[in-house]
Length: 130
Image (tube, rainbow, N blue to C red):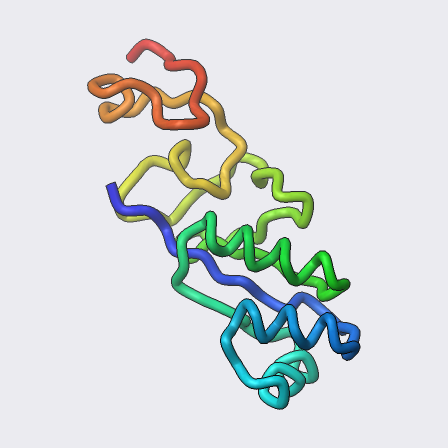
């Protein structure tokens, strides 16, 4: 199964102190001048089309310096809470897997054919019988 891509967003007004600028530069690879432009244009996309673990690290790095960052699922377009907990169960627009497998989900069990054949995916602790 293919994993969804995630987007890291600047969620609001950000401090323009050197640590915030350096955090944006670290996450994006942009120059300090372009990092400042990005901070000035909030809300804005910092990174897109990246795996969840990279998006979570980037958002954490930004939040530690006071930059309000959000992570959005590329398939279901739900925004994950800032405390890195999954969102409530809801529909996922994934063409590849059931809603329970979306990393933006808080579901811990699944009754799909894949889980029935190969066992639950990581984070899925129980399996309902089909």
